[in-house]
Image (cartoon, rainbow, N blue to C red; front, side, top):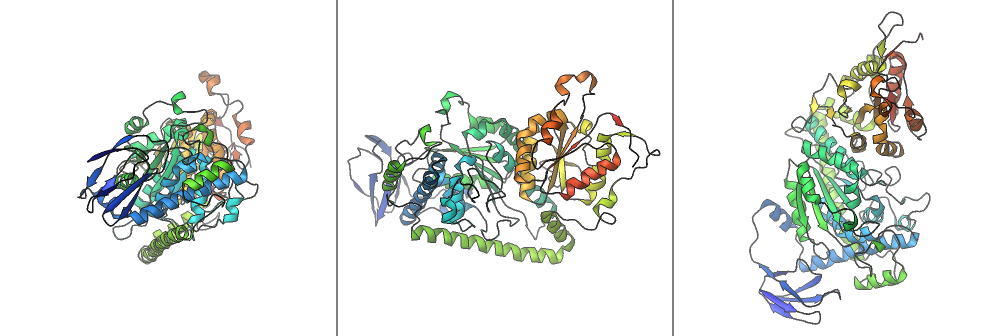
Length: 608
């Protein structure tokens, strides 16, 4: 059936128990007995012809059934919209209080955040480090008011006063998410593209630990990694590098919600970004879906997320059409991207959403109770997991201890009897002099069999970096239990993925390239240092003595550049004994990344 009407129409349709769905227009449905009444919420719609889809049967697809199980009744729908609008305005209030920030993306992405935190994700705010929690990455970190709002609503250690201190020095709510400041923040996501690339590493972490430690009886690691990202993240080259590898590896536990609002700081994306993102990601080997609107109804997004979770052999991208600054008088404009709305606009938006226009940071009791009930169910899931781990520990005590050591960055024994007793010995004047890259290979392979958390690889320079592991095969789609990663020619993505592996927990990742090409990876290396992620960077060919390769490969200034970075250890060992010391320092400092610079040429040993 179809109707033609204008914004002044008021009609009541007698349709038994059928449902009228308005997929593309902002409407409110009020169900009273068998009557469906509708009214416009916006003034920008003139006469429209709306197709009314009357569904009497439920599709039998698994994804539809899963989504249908959580479909909102009219009463729940109204509460759902109230929750979403609360998120929108709470986030906008944070920006207004700080007189600085980005309200537009939180207002547009609020429906995604609500669905993830209230229905989809499994987490425990009382234990943010639970190993099997679903990971959430806000890749467009400038929208962090959204994440702080969700952390507060779901009971993390973040008060209303913390939110009122948004972007203030020393607060728990810095201007971009910082993993070492705010409980519940997995990674620091200021530079665009880093977060979604970190998420690839996190998903690789889950896949590896599941392959190594899960059994037919105990599924310890089953979590998903969810990402919200924007156009900027998908324009940055680092995300292309990481997402290409994710498709190759078939990372089915990675689900990205793409905020396709068609706006950047300069203006509409038509100015510079007109490619078909969906086709690009399909070419990477991703599962791609599109959702046309989440402004006032989440059913399409529910179905899409359920479908994405059912695809086990591909990462998923869900393109979601949103309106930046939804509710503002400037909605849909880049003007809402990076500046507070202003008091007048805030008041009209709150009025439009049925909130008190004169109240700030308002959370109604029914909204608060709704999230509290969801958190209680999430805590139950964690309690069940802990009971399972206790049984696992009794049946597999060695593996259980190994896991505890991995996640606490500890290892058994001291330098004489433990891990470092396996380091290679070198006698001056007796053993043959070697290039320090070969010394690095010996040290790395002496440690790896006894340090299961050590995982990594090279940016397509394995024969030159000498970083392969003799104790392990390649980490590939069908062999995720292995520990050597073929990153391909993707230095920046490689470093960002290693940050994600470290952030997941239980890993000491390493990666390698030529020292001069650290320049390609510096963006992510800086995030390693800032985030206190102890990634080990093995950088070979460390001098100008590269012969015919010439100045493009000569790292004239690179060591000085790296040494100037805070919280980054830079080592340039001269012989095996110094190489051992460099690796020992790197391993025993899990919250400081290390660069180990190695020579291509033979280095004469020092007499210690």
